[in-house]
Length: 167
Ligand SMILES: [Cu+2]
Image: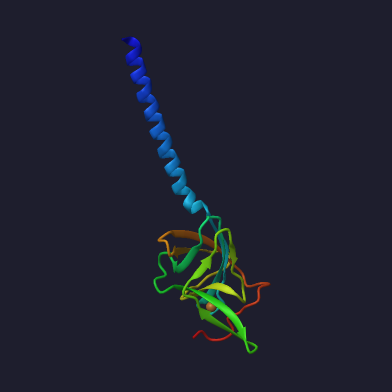
């Protein structure tokens, strides 16, 4: 009699631990979704009197599936008219031009490195000084979002690619 109860109790405990284990696995898988994306980068400070700049991100997609970055937003409070958009700078006929990108694909296992003169996040309506931090919200086609806080760096030693007017 005693052993039957003990067996039942042990079985219940075993079930409980299995369920807890399953829950842990599910949670790990869920957090794993975001940990398969590593984002870093920096923002260029604005020139005196100008309100445009650029952020350069490094996006490492360690997932087995590709990701599509579809939207970047300035998520900082207090700068309502700040806008961010995906841009690429291309040289055509010897003239450097920027054009907006509808989305940025990051293939499985791929790292996309933005850089001056190439891919960048165009920032408009911002005032940024070296030493500041800027928060951006990245939205992916899957519905996944990611907040990133990026340091603002000085223009020293960096070549500018925004000589022309934006249009
Ligand atoms: Cu641009």
